[in-house]
Length: 171
Image 1: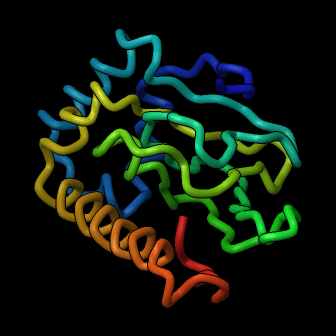
Image 2 (image 1 turned 135 degrees about the vertical axis):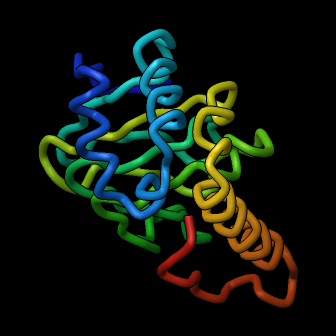
């Protein structure tokens, strides 16, 4: 369940922000128009605002959105054996997360918490990924991140690696 409030934003304003992100920089005019068209028509493809310390999602939730940080930052927390939270990574403007859920339907592997006031995230639901993956550069970047994080998640489940601290770049 998403707790952040939805922000009304025009597709052209959103695209001005996205155009600065490496993943969107190579979009053709046709791909940009298609993405903007989807944003204007798909209610679940939206921008949400979160306050500092507000949960974006919790570990093991099935949030099937790919999320882009438009403003602010998020911190990722895992749980130690004694139940305390351990910060394992921070992501900032231009970063994205959620590819494991968006591509494979896997639950979140960490708690994700807004790290700044007025953190803004673009949520792209699983069924809208075609508007992103139509671009070969975006598809490659998301696929590579998915593969990297899948390997990390699988490695963490191996008995050999239990108890080792997680890398700071995983989600």
